[in-house]
Length: 389
Ligand SMILES: *[C@@H]1O[C@H](CO)[C@@H](O)[C@H](O)[C@H]1NC(C)=O
Ligand SMILES: *[C@@H]1O[C@H](CO)[C@@H](O)[C@H](O)[C@H]1NC(C)=O
Ligand SMILES: *[C@@H]1O[C@H](CO)[C@@H](O)[C@H](O)[C@H]1NC(C)=O
Image (cartoon, rainbow, N blue to C red; front, side, top):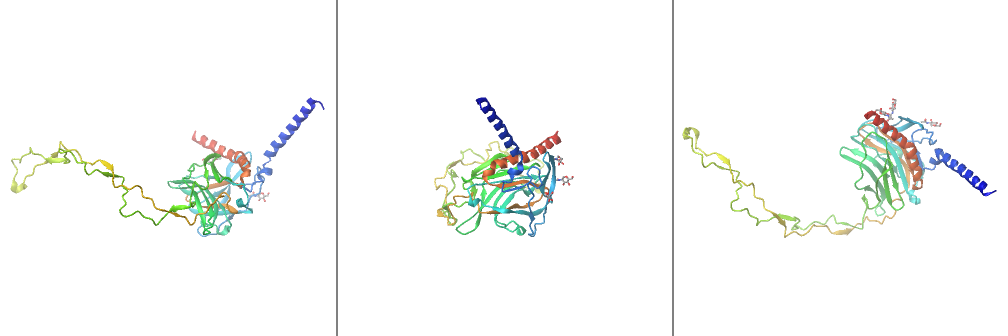
C-alpha cells in the first residue's frame, strides 16, 4: 500500500469508528443500564428499561397515595409519565427497595442523586424532596425511618429551602445523627419540572445543581450543622453575676445647658380673667396653656464607652465527648432503597427522572439530563411563554 492508500484506509476506519460511537450513544438502552438506579415512570423507548416496583407505606396517617400519570408532555421520545402526589393535605410514603443495595462505604466512587420535581399548583406548604434509606421496611415507612440522605425543596409559608441533610452513625453512642447544610439555597416556586442534582465526591466535597446549573458547593464537614468538634462551649458555664456587657452607656456628666427647657407648654402670662367670669358659677379661673417658644425637646445625654465593660462573655470550652474524627463522610453506610416521605398541603406534586449512581457515571447522568429532562423542560418553558404572550 502506498502512503495515500494507507491514509485513505485510516480515514475510512476513523469514519466507521465515529459512526459506531455516535450510534452507540444514541442507543441509550445500552448505556443507561450501567446506572445503579434509574426510574422514568414510563416504558420508555429512550431507556428501554423496565419500571420498578414501588410500594406505599401502611403507616397510619399516611393516607396520600401516589399515582403514575401521563405528564401530557409529548415529544419525540413518546409519552412521558410522572409520579403524582395527587391530593391536598396528606402524608405520603412511597418507596422502592433496590435489587442490589448501593454501598458507598465499600468503594471510593462517591455518589450522584438526581431527580425532577414539579409543583404544578401554587405551593404554600409542602415537601418536594427525595430520601435514600438505610435498611428499612417499605410498609413501615414514615418520618422516623432512618435515611442516609434527604435532598430537595421543602417550602412552607416564608420558609423555602433546598434541603441537603445526610446522616452518620456516631460511634460513641451509636446514634444516627443528622447533618444539615447551613443556609440552604431557595427553590423556584413556579410550575416547571426542575431538576435537582446532588454530587458527593471522594474529597468530602459536595455540589448541588438546579436545572444543571451549580447552585452550591462545599465541604461535608465545614458547611453542615450537627458536626461534632473536639472542643465545645460548656452549656453549664454562665457569666458571673456582676458581669457588665453593655459596651455603651449614657454620660452622666453630660448635663443640659442652663437655658434648656423641655416644657412643651407654658402658662400664658398675658391672659387675664374674662370680665364675665363668675367664680361662684364657673369656679376658680385658670390661665390657659400655650406652646412654649423656648421648648427644646427632651435632653438626651451623649453615649460614651462604658469604663466598666469587661468584654464579650464567652463560656469555657470543654471536650465534646461525642466528637469523632470522621474522615470520610462521603462514604455513607449501605443504602437499601429510595423514596418519598412527604407532607403536602397542595395537590399535584410530580416526581420524575430519578437516578442514583456513583460519581463515575456523572457524565452519563448529565447526558440523561441533557437528552431526556431538558427537552421536557424546554417544552414547558415554550408553553409558558406562549401563554404569557
Ligand atoms: C411496560 O412493559 C412491560 C413489558 O412490555 C409490560 O409488562 C408492562 O405492563 C408495561 N408497563 C406499563 C406501565 O405500561
Ligand atoms: C394529563 O391529561 C389527562 C387527560 O386530560 C388528565 O387526566 C391527567 O391528569 C393529566 N396529567 C397530569 C399529570 O396532569
Ligand atoms: C401548557 O399550559 C397549559 C395551561 O396552563 C397546561 O394545561 C398544559 O398542561 C401545559 N402543557 C405542558 C406541556 O406543560
